[in-house]
Amino acid sequence: MIVDLRSDTVTRPTPAMREAIARAEVGDDVFGDDPTVNALQERVAALFGKEAALFVSSGTQGNLCALMSHCQRGDEVLVGQLAHSYRYEGGGAAVLGSVQPQPLPQQADGTLLLSDIAAAIKPDDEHFARTRLLALENTWNGKVLPQRYLDDATALAHARGLATHLDGARLFNAIVASGTAPARLVQGFDSVSVCFSKGLGAPVGSVLAGPRDFIARARRVRKALGGGMRQAGLLAAAALYALDHHVERLADDHALAKRLADGLATIAGIAVTAPDTNIVFAEVANGAGGRTEALLAHLKQRGVLATGLIGLRFVTHLDVDAAGIDRAIAAVGEFMSKQN
Ligand SMILES: *Cc1c(COP(=O)(O)O)cnc(C)c1O
Image: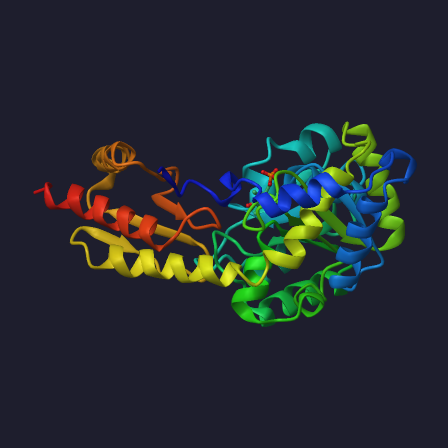
């Protein structure tokens, strides 16, 4: 058995989720006729206290629909230098939306300084792009952003006439870890996108929620992006199943991440960052000298998969258990014990 800790996107639908998919009532969602998609959209909108919602194919598509619906050509979005929507989405908002990103430095906890946000908002002057949107991310690298910060940053944006979007690909992890009510967590944001294909274990799909007129614009953008799906109720059924059965259990993933971090912390030569949720980052002493790659190769030989793009990264999810985590810890320990 492979212990796949590369991402929580690797989860496969459980037998019970597959049954829910098989039973789904469907229709043509481009006509608005799919009852299961409609049920999912209504449920997510209500959960987050927003007027409406839209089922989209991926988190990337949700963010892109949001940015292109908040912004016009020549508008600007303020976003973290390390934010997913800026760094890991192919530059879509610039490529397809003519929206200019203004990336701001991120603090170690994932926040942007309020003073940086305020200073980046440009005056209404023909020299400048129109600063239109503040886009934040929660969780960011598995960290839960402080509620006070989210409230202050969104209040600042609104006071300066900006709209606010939250990339909540792993927002359910933040909800479970913080115990904050979903609608309260996103109260300061005009729009929010959440993923069902990560820790929630669905095969495909995200939902974007926000004001009714905004969602109507996003629906048009989604169509233009090729994201108008037909009998998408098969996918929405998996997301509805995940809302019923896979949210509270995220606490198990968080406990496994802590078990992994605690285990790695006992190994000489490994520095671990304590996880808030389901992502564990670690550094190997002298990792820049090729040791990180050597460790990843060793882990792979032992049937443990992780990534090394930004230090070592391990993500827990519903397809790993404590025995798998213990195997990962043992494999790291075995590699490090052979180093000098
Ligand atoms: C995974 C992720 C996305 C994009 O999701 P895809 O479904 O892979 O397009 C967006 N934002 C964050 C923070 C993510 O982790």
